[in-house]
Amino acid sequence: MLAIVICLIGTGIIIALTKTKPSVLGIKPNRKRLLQATAGFGFAFLAGLIYYGLCLWLLKADWEINPLYDFSEMLTAAFWTLRSVLFEELVWRGILLYFLMKYLGARTGILISAISFGIFHWFSYEILGNYGQMLAVFLLTGIAGIMFGYAYKLTGSLYLPVSLHFGWNFVSIVIFSQGPLGDQLLLVTTQNELEGLISLFVFLLQIFLLPGIVLLYFYFLKRKEKFPVVV
Image (cartoon, rainbow, N blue to C red; front, side):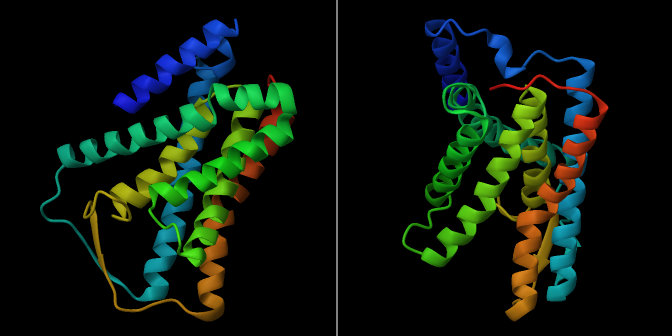
């Protein structure tokens, strides 16, 4: 929570010093943004269920609902996940991306933001020196960063990128226990490993499944109405 407060204060200072309107972040809620947030969470939630469900099936993994898990623990885990997402989005898709796009153009700004987002995860995942994992994490989070960046550009708001990010992380961390919080809703055990073409297919699915769904949604948004484009 402290990191989020610091981000908000820092963002406020930058906005004040540069005489930028706070509205560029699109934080003020309205019906359109809430609908976008709902759609974003739903798409990411569905994509996460498909990906992790397929992994369980291919691995022939055993799973069960955690008998010691209750609703309050789920709320705590969800709140922790949301905090981490808000921190990352405020840093990489907040005022920083706005200025990158303003002075360098949308494509260059989104690309720089996505690259730095991918590199950040080398440190947050503590994988420096493991070059195979570094490449995999960079591709996964970097492409996600491009998707989140375009979500901000298209809608002029943080609601869609935050909801997409939160939906995927919620499924991964809270439902399938694939994160730093350890055992959560589902307890998964397996001794099998994916190899060869199947492993490559699953990796590519993880990278492109959600961006593919969201790309169709972007197309729908562009056709439905013109959104403010932040450049």
